[in-house]
Length: 373
Image 1: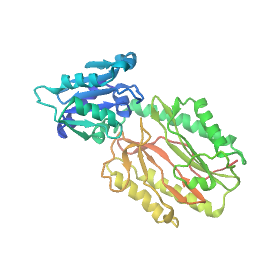
Image 2: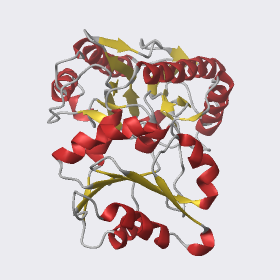
Image 3: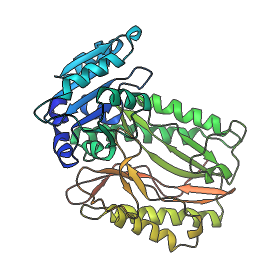
Image 4: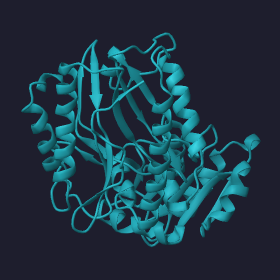
């Protein structure tokens, strides 16, 4: 990857297009993509400010200077200590950027999904009269097309996740609680080499599998005939796997087999349809049309998928009405599902990357119906 300052310069044409005099970046995936370091947000604000002419400054807590200084940031740094509070550092940053040949700062773009109210208020005081607008979508385009290095990190995260799932299902037994199965999965993820969890895993059996974002229950013991759904992933260097597979314990009824196979068919349609040049709408429409044509259309609940990288949900969102054209380097999930409340849920999720002539399915864990336990 290029140096952080070169990466920052990728924002300048977007700033020109959207008439943004300054962009403010806080801790999160965009910051991590630019600087290859993850600053967790806490009560101490850390903000990088980029002006449309390329000048950049940073407001940094004194506590974080040993971590911030090696990042390759070439602009002026205004640090502050806990006992001083942060307002003075923001005022200095505002003074450094406030006047130039561009004139007064009139419009500031912020990450609307990441910036907190107290940080925005500090910016407003540092740049009096400036309009603060949500530029999250524009800023996040720096992560839309993954590099070969990023794709390699995703492959590594997926590889350890799939290894962990295979080890986990080999240990599942009827009578275990959902929480115990979740504990097996988490242990196997770290044993396989995951550096962190991509997100809190979903391990759900029986009626709980019909909850799209279920939590493992400490008191429910899995029983024969249950569907057992795993939605999980490990992370490597911040890049996150997101995989879902649904199994059956002991045996599977004919009705549940048909339910599962409807989801599997939709997943196959998604993997066969995805390619550069079609829109996210086109892909979602093909997958959802497969489910709509099945006997189980009334159990549909969500779109086909979402982008994947340093965040487990990011652009592009694979949904009807999204006209984004799929292009090389985009990574996203294909995860159709059906959910019959109080009885069963099935989801089959794969991670794919768009290549020059098609897609590469990054996940390889088998999808055919599998009975375990």
